[in-house]
Image: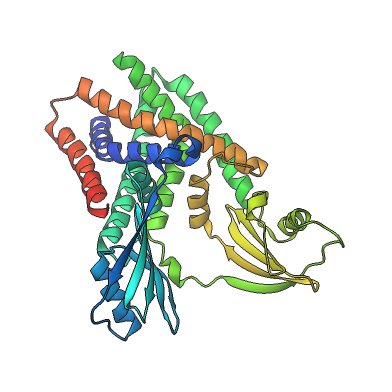
Length: 191
Length: 191
């Protein structure tokens, strides 16, 4: 039994190792943003022109997105008599679009960042509701990694319990951290 | 060296066990979340009578006491917005978000987004000691800050322990490659 759990702990632990490290790194950036100001995203403005724009707003948004290669989820669509505005977002990149009916062109403000911005936004992206199937697949991957982390945590506790050497100090550490953290979870929830 | 690293691996895992479980449960919760664009918050008009001559900051504090969920964050000065005579105060708490709009007349428009247990757990996993926080939420955030370092250490020490003690297990190497490869694939495909 011990050997089986040890192998499961090792296999799943190694599968999530990179994910855990990247999540820890991105959480560190979120908590210490003052150290990472240099990695803030930058904005670039471009123009997208349509030769034969569709009249239907939905088709128009699709045409602008295809023309400007804007992948991701669609947010904040606002239509008016003079044009249409919307936002397309995926981890690390955000397009804000303002289309003008008379000029048949859209001004696209694209905000994007490098590695740190990307892992930060990957950390914030989850769920399987996205317009872009790739983002939903990422949401499923996050869920899978989370399930693995639960198994790795519980098998780790089991294996520790079976080892005599670290039982006393480990027991004290576990008891103190469990009491304090669970108490805090209950207090903050229930008041 | 291996014994020391293994002992630290076990102890750090035990200390941050609750944080690991909270983070992984929040990952599972987020995977099952519905499209946030379809969410309709509850809007109520409620009586509110601040004292004559109170400043916007004082009104914000009264609003926090009257309408905020338990452990709502003190309202930072930059979040207080007065536009066209309407004072807008956002209140953040792990138990829910509340936005209050007040323009006199003895009543305020209160938009309430109350979190269920799953979203509460998700909010708690995001708590880091940034800015001012209510006391219990702040103590929890220090624990989550500790968990960031613990998470990174567990990942690195886990890979080290495998590489030093059981490097010949082919399936373990495959597991590490699969997890890391999938993460790199998503990073490249989404960027």
